[in-house]
Length: 308
Ligand SMILES: Cc1cc2nc3c(=O)[nH]c(=O)nc-3n(C[C@H](O)[C@H](O)[C@H](O)COP(=O)(O)O)c2cc1C
Ligand SMILES: Nc1ncnc2c1ncn2[C@@H]1O[C@H](COP(=O)(O)OP(=O)(O)O)[C@@H](O)[C@H]1O
Image (cartoon, rainbow, N blue to C red; front, side, top):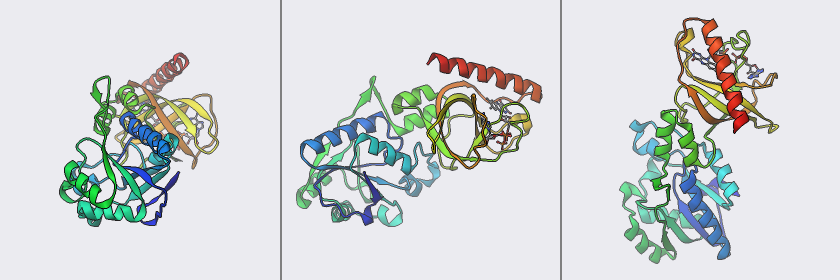
């Protein structure tokens, strides 16, 4: 897959392209992208996605404080797995947000020879959303491509959306989030030093550094799978997300205790995949009670992993 900023793309192959944020690359996104890839192959064309980074809401609705389900690199990897040939990224900023629908499409066509533009329900393009379906259809005729409307796609009669997935995660419901995503929700980051307390209490925890604008599941304890991204080894784990109230309220941390593992992994890259919520984070009267509970959490997680 070719993955680059739109400005540096010079594509020659006729292309079927869809535009969107695609945060999460969830099941509805996957459904569209698979169909796009399939039809592109039938027509001897390439399949492409034009996406935005940062998310347009960071510019248009900064008060919403968008929390990303996926980084741009994760989105690229997921799209590559689906067979997409080109992921072009348009840096969303004041200037690009002011483009008229026609100027936007002309910019796109300068870099990619679009034959079909696939547009989801309610999609609007360009400054103040002026590029509605009828407007885009006229522009397509003028500029030489067709508009293909993408019908609503539902999973068990429910509309799958990035917003719905964020709400599930905010409630700690990783199972429903994972169902909508079609894979476990995961966080990727580098292992950074913590307060060195974990080892002393018998449960060393790898503290994973996550960007502050990334979505986190609700504070609490989860059954997880942890993959070391450099050597691809995977381990069962129990992960705490939270402010560790037992020790006074500290900064929010994501910390995973890996089972049957004893290595120094500071500075290494991990992917933590969330499988099952165990409980909310609690303030314990003392370290002994906390350690006893962590022991029960770890036991629960090991049994859960054995059964699934
Ligand atoms: C499975 C698990 C559950 C935890 N639950 C809580 C909790 O409910 N309340 C709390 O204050 N800390 C909780 N912790 C966090 C511990 O306080 C933390 O791992 C310990 O302070 C080590 O921190 P360090 O990595 O900075 O050394 C939990 C940790 C783990 C691994
Ligand atoms: N089973 C394990 N799970 C997580 N980290 C482990 C494990 N065994 C060893 N480690 C190492 O120990 C570190 C965590 O120990 P801990 O005492 O909690 O220190 P810190 O406070 O710096 O996180 C991890 O970053 C990792 O390098």
